[in-house]
Image (cartoon, rainbow, N blue to C red):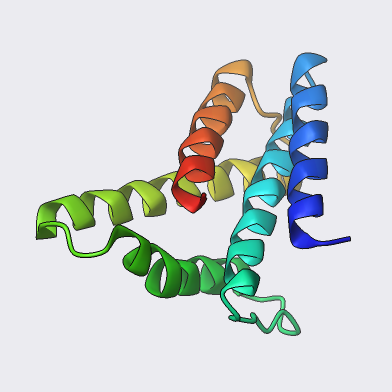
Length: 130
């Protein structure tokens, strides 16, 4: 299964979980869908990520994506335009990651309001990564 297949599968399951109010599962799957899409973009550019060390892999992947792909993608707009796009990527990724942490590692459940934030962040990141 390719990274893009994993992206699509996770996105489908996230949508299904959302529809039946399984917000923790939806949050987890939306997050991993975006992560797989980032990995796919890096892979298609010939950039591999060492995932043998699980600690910090996701932040490292996001940093490499931002440095190697996003900076190249946005090209040379004015400093403020470039900064705004990078801030948008960082804030949405960190928001999605934080909510995924709550869904996966705490006794708290993701609320409807939070999952709607997840979907918004997912949509922004999905467009940025394209």
